[in-house]
Length: 142
Image 1: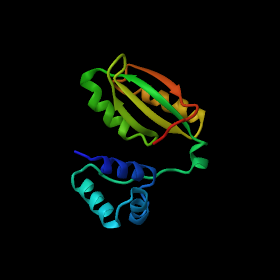
Image 2: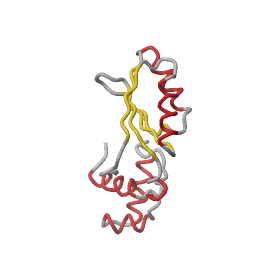
Image 3: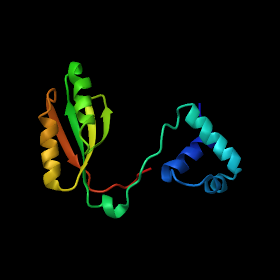
Image 4: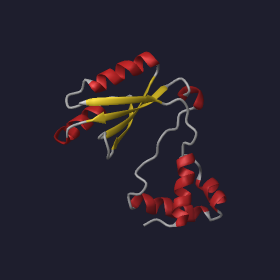
C-alpha cells in the first residue's frame, strides 16, 4: 500500500527518474534520507521496478505513433503477445475488454514505415482484425 507521500515521490520520479535525492527532497519538503529510504522501500516492495528513458521532444516529434486495436482468439493471445514483444516499434501492449482484445501503441520513423508495421502486425498468426489510429498530438503525458 502506498501513501500520499509515496505517490508524490513516484509522480516526481515519473517526470525525471534521474532527479537527485536532494532535488526530490526539496520539492517534497522532506530530508534526503527520507527520500532515499522511501525509494529503497518502494524498490524493495516491487512498486518501483526500474527506471526509464524519456526521449527529447525534437527526436520524438519526428516519430509517427499509432494505436492499433487487435482482435485475437483467446487461445492465441499469449503467442501473439510473444510475437509483439519481438517487434521493437511496439512501445506498449494492453489487454482490454470490448470489441477488441488488445491495444498496441507503436512508433515508427515515417508513415511508410508505420504502414509496413501495421501490415506486419496484421499478418501475425492469430491476429484476426486490426483497426489503427494515428496519434496527431499528445496533450497530457505523465
